[in-house]
Length: 422
Image 1 (cartoon, one colour):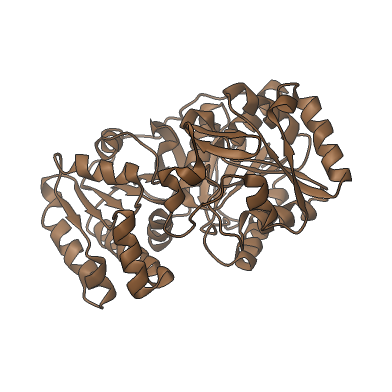
Image 2 (cartoon, rainbow, N blue to C red):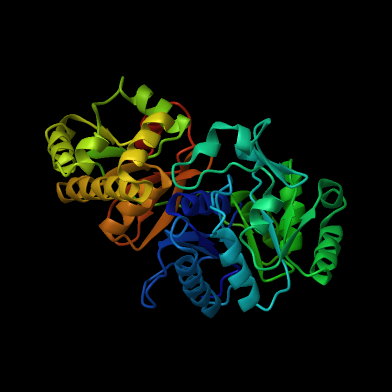
């Protein structure tokens, strides 16, 4: 296997988002869970997205896991490595975007890496180094309140500089408008100044094509799925990849019981849960009971098993910012988060053990916990449910999944996902 593009994603839903984007752009893509075993059978592909659950762990661990993934991808001839991060740049001042970018760049022998979370299709743009969600700076948007990685500074040059060993520069929109050569020249100039990373502006889809072509002249870049789209288009334009069909045939229907799990606390997911209540039974976990040691997960699983024979069910641990803050204040942020993730993973394991083969999961941390507990090695990418969210089919068993970042999808996301999982 010789890969045109190797990708390392810092969470599982972001990896699905990227795999979906690359597939739509014509790259034959597989998403793996963790660094694959050397004997994992994979089809002939152009790109592999290695999914890590590294966004919210200590920076040193994130670096070690990312280096392991890079070694696996490089051993398979990856022509370029993309470190895939969230389009809202979720990361604390201790990392992990800066430390991982530094490590991958240095290991590749590069002086500087292009960095951008811009993805105009999902209303994430960067202007003069500031990240916007729609028309609003990130730090003024509801997305600033991520329970594990709150983002209170919209200036990504400042944010990344607080995490990085080397300085951070800016490639402004005026430079991007001049094309890939101008971006490359700006990268060279910043590298001579001792900068190790450069935040790149992008406000339109065509800006991504410029940034992808510029990034591809180096071995490493960091960004959201928008940069992945730019890289894919550059690979196709350069003739390094022959574009494939936008959606692969993933095989026959699976059928059987279906269930949905929601752990995200984003406004989008909260609205989707409220809409789902009109279409399926919904049970909300009580975090206080769970953290007090009561068997809340067992009770929720029993509730679901009584109902899945009649149709899909939804179990949610999601809550609004004020409720999340109250639970974190009482029990501690890490303890609360880990307990809820473990509960959702246990519920998923029980559901699958009782025949569920169609599973929809909302929330990056929840998706990571669920997929790890189920021990799924890799996925093939199917039809798009919503921007950034594809249907996935496991490579080792007959099972459909959808792994959704909290902010993605329309109001009827859960019903939409299940319709595409026959």
